[in-house]
Length: 396
Ligand SMILES: [Fe+2]
Image 1 (cartoon, rainbow, N blue to C red):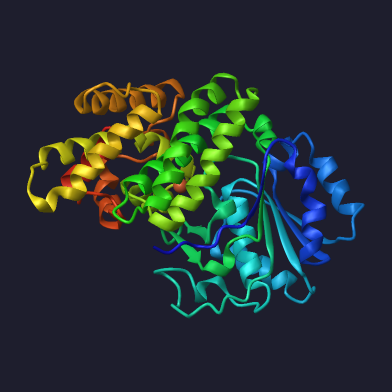
Image 2 (image 1 turned 180 degrees about the vertical axis):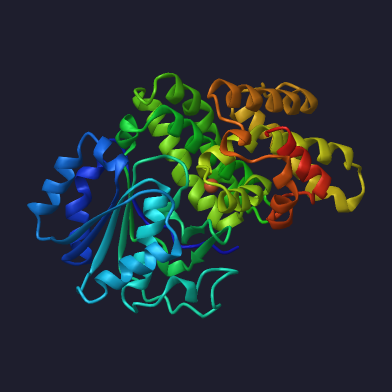
């Protein structure tokens, strides 16, 4: 078993007050990258800026970025700051902001274009790992970017969403302050929470899961079961729910980095590349139906032959998920647990009003294009194109 490096983690209510004291260990000349809207909504944004001002740190620039970062945006930021002797990068924002800052931290020392390294669509050059220290403070609970090695960039003109990925891009410190979620709009809490939950389920069910990732995923799935709906119901006001979902999201970044993902993200990649639709919404809208199709296919192909071991493990894991999320009791039969999980996830998607894909202009005419770009990733069973299509058709 191998494990990617995990950042030093400061987790808990009020942990963002540690930012300046932790950052000073990594340098003085600081580039701060925040979201636009999300940063303005933060209750303690002035305190965060004052912390930096009254410390030994020198704020060279404060950039505000919005939307999902494109390779061109990253290159522009790098080109504008490469001669300014930046020593560390701090990001406060959602997954897109953290990903943008992560890529910038990775490129500032060389001034190189991110297109040299972007997976699948770049020039395929070897990244040398010469990255600036990076500290990540997530303001949403969804991607787990604060603990992962990939920066996801989108180019909608070319229709791709690809990663700049390297162990050196893993943040030095992740400061996860669940109080930040108090100012996050409820629809975003719901969509991002579904992203985190899906990342946990996909990495738990992954063909590449290990006892290490399984134990982390199980604890985090249980937390999501306790926190996600109370967080939605309270519109972010429930402090215990904020902590549970922030924890689940952070752990999902560790499990996905070590075990990989499955069909929801295998579809979310191309959909996010082709259409302007928030990543969490794609994951949320596919969450219940992708798992329903997976379970039905696993059951249909289930038999007792030796090569079906992986499939049987996946079905048992689905039963465990059903229990951990609170949809079934330990004493229930596996059939009841699986059915309860499908109905439970459908109920959550409905309750949290996760929009359908048609609201973002995605329709039947786009099916073949999406399918041609989709990926099974590490799903425990290989789905046919027709089975992939069925997931999408239920969410037009
Ligand atoms: Fe995701």
